[in-house]
Image (tube, rainbow, N blue to C red):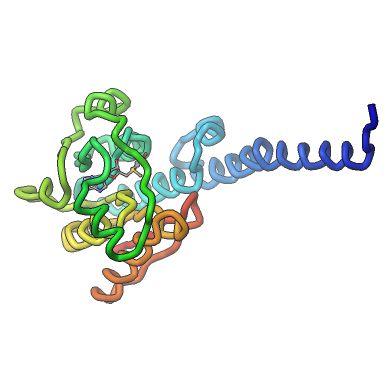
Length: 236
Ligand SMILES: C[S@@+](CC[C@H](N)C(=O)[O-])C[C@H]1O[C@@H](n2cnc3c(N)ncnc32)[C@H](O)[C@@H]1O
């Protein structure tokens, strides 16, 4: 059999580079993150198995600031799906309530229609394979969780609360803009809102548009975090 030696060697080289990127670089980032978060007490191994180390370690550092300043308020996530990030919020804020807003059935028809009309994402993921039980099961402090199942912002009616940490991860323009309109006025001094997918301009361009629109209307600034898909970090 004829074997092109040069081609064979370049395939091996490419394989090694991929291996380095996938495994070693993740360990290096994990080491950096664990040293950044040293005083919070998370071990390096926790980061190695984390798919978005930058976002998780930023959450921890932000929680540290909030506790340091004694900022009062509860926490929330709009767009929970199976609770992957919500679980981390629950862990980072053991003495705060965690409001969980989701249809638990995937995107709402009216939001998808608006998304198409405004010319943002054309194709959306299916987020229907979840349930409140599944989400609660993975929480370390399930007693802190308040499930608000259904269409946001309707599910936020009658809540009298302030927030120190909010994650908005709803992908589409409409719920993200409504989420900012609801949560920013209720954000405590020293509080943070993470809006995921800010730089996911290929798949969910409505996220950046919603953040930019709300922040320019309210004359507020944000920090673009270089986590997976990019997050906009809003502070008060
Ligand atoms: C990207 S997923 C959330 C991922 C999740 N944060 C995680 O850590 O895996 C987006 C979620 O937003 C929810 N969602 C989007 N618009 C909504 C709305 N108007 N009301 C309630 N839930 C909504 C969807 O049902 C979906 O579960």
